[in-house]
Image (cartoon, rainbow over all chains, first blue to last red; front, side, top):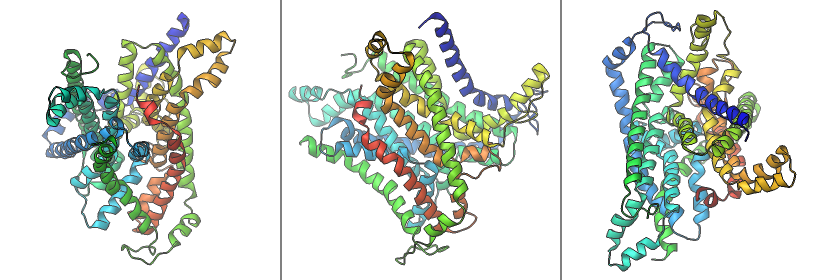
Amino acid sequence: MTRAWKYVGAIWLALVVVLLYLPILSVGLASLANTRYMRFPHRNWSIGAYTDALSQHETLVLHLTSLKVALLVTVLSVILATLGAMAFARYDWRGRSAFQKVVVLPIFFPQPVLGLALLLFFSALGFTPTWKTAVFAHMVWVLPIVTLVISIRLFGYDPAQEDAARDLGASRWQVLREVTLPYLSPGLISGGLFAFLLSWSNLPLSIFTTGADTTLPEWLFSRVATNYAPVVSAIAVIATLASVLLGCVVILILRLIDTHGIKGDGDHG
Amino acid sequence: MTQQKLGLLFMAPVAAFLLIGFVSPILIVGWYSLMEPRSFDLNTVFTIANYRSAFSDGYGPPFFWSLSFAAVTTLTCLVLAWPTAKLLHRFAGRGAAVITALIAVPIFISESVRLFGMSLFLMPGGGILAGSMRALFDLSIGSVLNTKLAVYLGLVYVHFPFVLFPALLGVALIPQDRIDAARDLGASRWQVLREVELPLALPGLVIGALLTFVLCIGANAEAAILGGQTVTVLTRAVEQRFSYAQDWPMGAALTMLVIAMTAVFVFPALSRLDLNRLIRR
């Protein structure tokens, strides 16, 4: 690549990033005034919308509902996906390639349609939708993604390590605890992060499956579509910052695992 | 235990979950779609009346708009993602890793937030763009908010990362020496692209395109937040059958048609892809 092309390339990439963040930045800018109508540039910049948001009980309730759902989705998905990933990437068995294709189907499925189908399913079974049914709905979509994430890690695993440990007298349980799981842990942590963030931010499934409960994205969607208020922007910023913060912490943990290494980590062996 | 037994044992929980959570809801929808119009119970008196009215009752426009939006969005995303993926691959290193991460972050920020931000950005008068233009250059500009163009921009904005990441996987499948060899043999830039790069990167591009196309068929938040009342997309039309019209069997029939449409694209593409090769590096 010539020098000139390098500049063009760098400008293109910068443009892509800037355009991706402009709308997100716009929410932040809009939240910094507490006027009834949005008139940018603000005459009076203020953090009034944030104090309003923090003083409303609803803000807390929304965050707690989303948190409950996301935490349960994370724990349950990681457990199930770890098992699924073993079948997906570790063992060589007849039917594996069919299994691999079936597992990813829910990802290639329009989410609002899945939400509607699940709503009908719950009502046919006589379940009243609540945040608990939303956990189930989120998992239908999140579990395949987490299975893929853990499988990617598992593809790099050398099963001979287990045999070696077994030969040295380790029990099945010890092999799992001291060889397999430590190697898998970065995959489990990133899988868990994916699960949490995707559930936390999900709109199309929640809309149909939460019943009378409301998650953050749902509430934002209903308020955005009807009436603008700066407090909506402020809550959007708070919810987003919470997930970004969590993401940063988890990525930091992954870096630490990566640099200090852990027992059984094949990458650095 | 043999690998065969272990494989079956470990796949069982996930398979059972998806059977309950994914397959049975679709079957229930299929069952509802065969019930008498406007009934709420499931029984064994089947009718295809709902499908008949699905084709005759003017659902053409929602199908047309959702499919058109999906096709145009997929194409746009591919055209934008290809050079981006090539550049990220070429600049491989710390800088590229940071940019890749920056592009990934918005995937995890709620659609509600991102589309809300887009509407704040595009808002006429006091919006971020229009307001800045007026303050900085004393320029008053119009707004595309509440038009089909805004819906299209929103769809491209939301789905771009879904094409980019599979495209990156695809680009990584192209060995540089193949490109060099084609060049040495006198192939033009265009010929290299068409005859070497695109075919080799195809699996990644197919996954990205398929994902975007399918997600766009179902997308309704973009039209709701950015489109005003200008267009009724497919899932909106279906949802209205369930909510306002209280006609579940009709809604279910439309849902089945959307699912069938999705399947027509997903099955042939997925059956030809080798996921093992693409994921394992």
